[in-house]
Length: 404
Image (cartoon, rainbow, N blue to C red; front, side, top):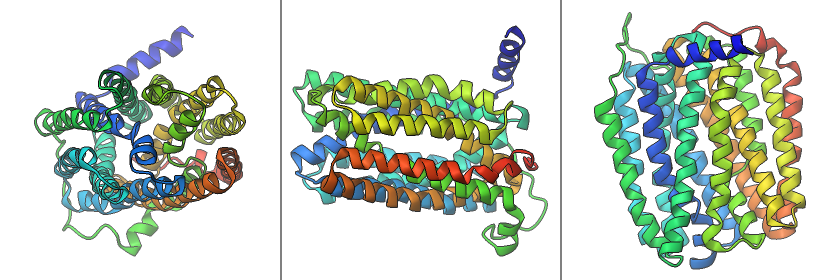
C-alpha cells in the first residue's frame, strides 16, 4: 500500500504545469456550462413547454455536434502543428453563446444556442486532448488525463451547486442564473489565452492533409477497436438531461434538482484521477468492464426508483462510472495513435461517438414520452450489456498499446 501511494505521488510530480492550466480552464468553463445545463431541461419543460422527445433531440443534436466537429479541429491541429489557437477559439465561442440561453423565448432559440455552444466545444476538444498528450510522457498519460478530467468535473460540481443557490436566492429565476454563467466562461478564455505556452512541434516534412486513406490505415486496428468500443459506450450513456428529468419527477423541488448533478459530479471528480492513475497500471479492458457493470447498476436503480433517495443512489453510481471510463477512453485513444495523428485520432473517435450520442438521446426521449422513465433506463442497461460483449475480444488491444 505504501509503495502504491509513493508511485501515485511521483505521478503527480511528473504532470507538467500546462496540464493543470488546461484542467483549470476546463473547470471554469464547466462551472459556466453546468450552471445552465443543470437547469436547462426543466427550463425547456416548464417555461418553454418542450416534450421529453424534443429535449432529447435538442440534447442529442447538441452533444453529437460537439463530438463531430472535433474531427475537423483535431485534423486541423495536426496539419498546422499548433493546438492552442484552436482551443482558445473554441472556448471563446462557448463563452459568447451563454447570453443566448438567458434571452431564449422558444425551444428553437435554445437549440441554436446549444448548437453554437457545442460547436465551440467541438473546436476545442480534440486539440485540447491532443495537447495534454503532447505535454506529458507516456508513463503518466493516464494520470494526466485523469487529472484534467477531475478538474473539469470539479467545475461540473460547482456549476449546479451555484445554480441551486442562485435559484433559491432569486426565487426560481432561470434567466438570472443564465446571465451569471457568462462570467466564469469569459474567465476560462482569458486563462487559456495568457496562462499556457504550447510545446514546440517539429515539422519534419511538408504539411499534408491528415485525413487521408494511408493515415487512416496507419492509425491501426487497435485504435479502430477503441473507436467501436467508445461508440457502444455512448449508446449506453445517453444525455445527462434525463438524469435531471428523473430527479424532477421523483418529487424534488425545482430549485434543488441541480443538487443531483452536484452529487454526480462530486463522485465523478473524486474518482477520475485515481482511476486514471490506475489505468496506467492495469489492463484497460478490465477497467472498462468494471465501469460497464457500474453503469448497468445505475440504470437499473434509476429505472426502479420510487423515491428521491434511490434516484440519488443511481446518479452516484452514474458518476462513478464516468470517473472509471471517460479519462480511460481518452488514454486508450492517445496510446493507440501515432503522435503526429493524435488530433485526427481524437477527432474520428468523437465523430463516431457523436453519431451514437444523437441516436441514444433521441431513442431515450422517445421511450420516455411513450413508455416512461423506466423504459429509458432499462434500454440504457441493455446497450451497456451490448458494450460488454464488444469487450470480449479486446484483450488483443490490452497487449498492443501503440507507439506514443
